[in-house]
Length: 214
Image (tube, rainbow, N blue to C red; front, side, top):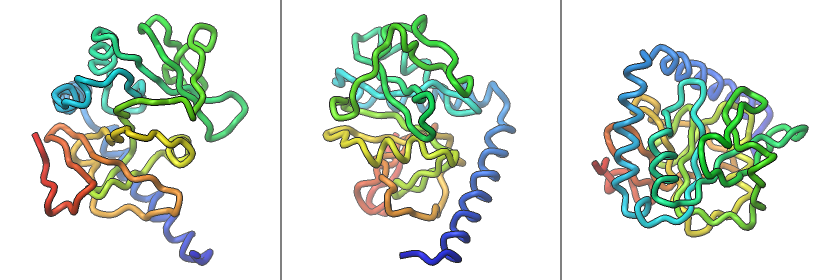
């Protein structure tokens, strides 16, 4: 068990890393962000698991995250079930996922992020979610699959409490967001792969045996 002193030191380390990466991300010109998003997205579209998936879990980009519009449009156009997150009102750190059939069913949620309209898109119980692939945002990732979020705990809680069996978890980010070290918590769930504009890093094996796959 971590001591209070060690826990505070790790929290401070996470906060400093989060601040640094968010500053770097916010300084990206919009054109460069769009290019990185497209190049990273193409790696996802070329994955056999994406092409065969009947249900995929995605997110609507905000705060300089890699844009997922191309992935959403491709999934909808190919008849996949697209699951998108929605914050649960009155429950801090809790979100649910609902299927969305088109962009017209999206509306701004609590944090100004586009979410499935609760009036037309009913949430699916966490135990009933069965995506074959999940694209997960984050502030930073390691090549071993650790993820650093924004500090609200939404994805940490969701990933810790939802089985998502037979689902490939892919962290989606720009190359500079892949770092050497992130302090690990006991509830952290590792990604199976990290995708950036340079390619895909598979995390299941030792990183020395799992180079970037383009």
